[in-house]
Image 1 (cartoon, helix red, strand yellow):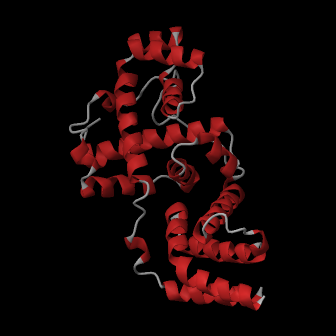
Image 2: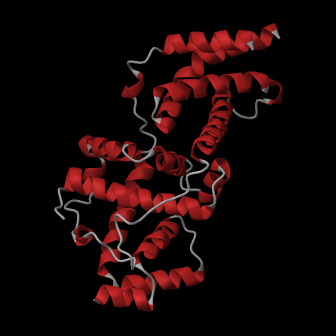
Image 3: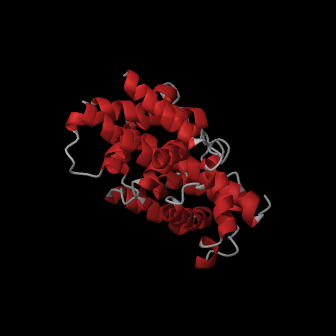
Length: 184
Length: 91
């Protein structure tokens, strides 16, 4: 037990920052993130005997963090399934937004490496409601493995597609307003 | 008018954008692929969107690991470590 405590002391020292960074990234709220990281360590401490050392401690802790994020998400958004597309499509399902047809001026590699563009993109991503932002981030963190994200988050594939669809429509509009300056 | 006809005959743009998501993730069935292809063949709006969508997909995949480094700078990580140690001891 003393040994166990000693190991954890070192883990807290070594991994708190990486975990906090990931938690902040996923939850976008300092207090929620801080609570989450504490929960991760408590859970890890309790289930330490099941840690077999097949993965690195950080990988294991990150895995617990993902589970905790999913719990957090489920608790918070359980009764909130409505995703409306009214802002982008009319009642027949046609585009309302004529700006869609206008091309983006510079879709090249340079733009992708432009730090200013990356910042604008991050802001647009952060502006999404947490209900969508968390699955979107996890989807890309998991390198677009949809079934894994669905399983982790406890959401249906249909729901994931709808969240991605709605988020992307909004990201597109946000970038057109703030970067490409396309007028409607 | 043309937009309305596309809908009527095929698939609304609101549904097509959902199929575009699934396509980007490689999750379309044969029938869905066909419906998407047909819709895109006659709908310039969705074609334009698909292009933008693919671009966003590429950027997000590339940049996702650039988690905001700066957000943690003004955060007292030592204080958090203290809190965690406290909790573990009292657990």
